[in-house]
Length: 227
Image 1 (cartoon, rainbow, N blue to C red):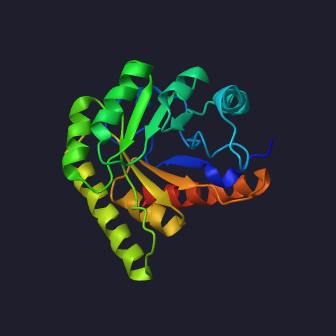
Image 2: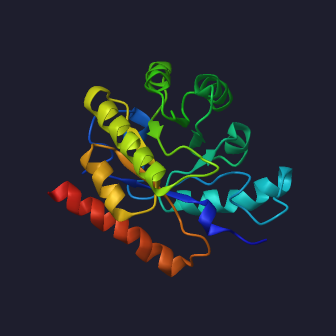
């Protein structure tokens, strides 16, 4: 069964420690500092058709264990029961029309000890409601569009940057900037006080290239922190 590395995200810390601000206790105590992986449960493993049920559990569990042995926290995206089954550190909830209900359901399944973070989309109201409900981090990404121009991408990135700046200036809960594909974007969001940036590994990348690729982001963020 093959692994599509392009379906994984690496989440890179922007601060000098676990977080620049006080933020979530669970994130501050998490052993992972530089590369937290968030596999998408039904897309991270194999090709079409995707594995399901026990086949999916068996495929993901070794990856979870491998990452955790390296001190990396593993979050499963969009599937709380799978996160519980494979003993992941928690769950990432993608943007949706009702993220608060999704968060409450995930928290009920996973319990208080698990990391549960949410992409709040483009809504300040949802972000604040999730923070009040106890989300361990608030994420801001780029909207999915069937068709988009270069101008659309620029506008969406500018809006994401504005949300990160707004959140980081006011709230203590850690902020994660999603959908990063360039080191310049990562550095700009770190300057805006994002605590973490979530970047998706390029498709078909091998282990050696993935390490060098991730080091490029670490280097860009380290330069931002030192500035």
